Structures are given as C-alpha cells and as structure tokens.
Image (cartoon, rainbow, N blue to C red; front, side):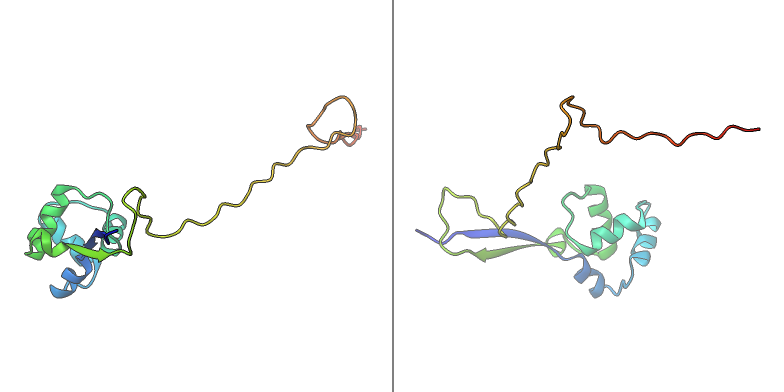
Length: 130
C-alpha cells in the first residue's frame, strides 16, 4: 500500500495581521468599515482566532484589499503524509470518544393502578378567616 497525502488548508489571518502591524480586532474592524464593510466584533474575532468554515467572498475581498495580499497568503495548502492508510477507509483525524451507555430509568410502580405521575400530595388545609 502507498502512503496517502492529506491536504489541509491553514488559515493565516493572524500572521498577515502581525506582518501588517494590525494588533487588534478593533483596528481591523475600523479599516473594514472605512472600506464600506460592516461586521460585528464577535464575528470578526471568531474569524481571526480560527479558520472559518465559510467566509463570504465580499469579506475575503475586503481582507485582501486591506492586507494587500493574495488569497494564497491567507490560505495555505499544507500536505501531511499519513501512515499507510487503506484506500477504502475514510481518514479520521482524531479518534472519537466512546459514548457512554445511556441507562434508562424505569419508574417503580408500587400500587397496581399504573399511575406514574409521582406520589399523591394532599394540600395544606386553608385556615378560615374570622
């Protein structure tokens, strides 16, 4: 069997921001607003911290204009050699945690009438007003 290569995109926005001396998300947000692009601070912080699953082409276009770079500067294609993987089996990056077996609790029915709503509760007597 041959060793497979797994291709993975690396999000390099933090590196590009550091190279351009943009130190805060607020500063990047101000620059985006000056170019006419509105984004919330929480969305922008999330995009800076980790690789987004989806990104609009409009935001990507504005980031490229602000950072004066190319798409290949923001996204790098890394090649990682895997141990001899079988062609028919999917490649799993990290092993899944075994799921705990769920135990279903069966209600105890002491009386034979089949009522499972809980114990019978009698209300306190309401004092009469004189």
